Length: 163
Image 1 (cartoon, rainbow, N blue to C red):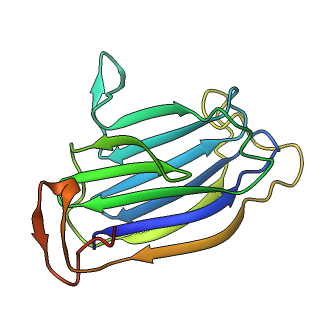
Image 2 (image 1 turned 30 degrees about the vertical axis):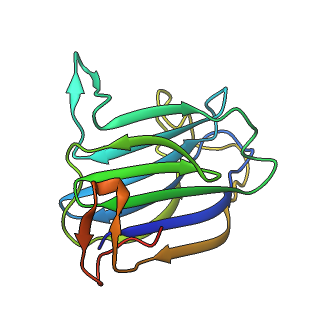
């Protein structure tokens, strides 16, 4: 529970899939997803359960980030720092977004998935050819520390973030 979760991934060039890295348990999750058909390329950051505002995903628990690069041409680092009441999302070492609403507080699993739902309004799949998500490296870091992202809170050894 709690830590820094990092991976180097290359997203498939084939339209119609969702590439995801997420921390999951039955009560909630923290997600980074990339939809291969969305142009310009974007990362989708989310915390579940999510909130809605006026029938749309709330910015308190969801954020779309335009990447500014082609995620199919090379590997890029995608990272989630999970702290008590805070999730921080990074791409290539740059902090992109912080969320502190509905952040899970129970142990979860780090998971990767590559899927399609056939939904024309979401994944825009199924893909018309084989699509492969490449994961070159996964790092999960933990350490006892006083961490600046949670206002100097002291984290016990089994849950502290190595920064």
